[in-house]
Image (tube, one colour):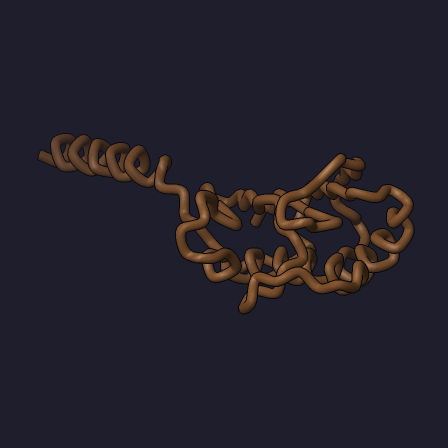
Length: 145
């Protein structure tokens, strides 16, 4: 009887873990307009994948005219997604920055250091020809709890 209960419990646990294994949880959905075809973040177990987020205002979804504010908004938006997943900037392990104008690299670095502290996440920064909505910067990240 004990073996039967133990086996039944093991099967239940396996079935439960298999059903939640693919149960990725969207986070940060308030950052994008309803009907947007992506999630700002997906929490898959203890790993958070943050989509490329632009520096839009989370309420109006408008881009600021000032580049520094746009960059700060990107990082604040990432912070909102992290917070929704009960994480913070110190949990970020990798960052990808996409800039329309690479001459703004140093300005981005100065702002970036306000949010990330040592040990800094791994990072890639590239220049791109164009971003949606006329954005000048987009940042994506991966975090682990």
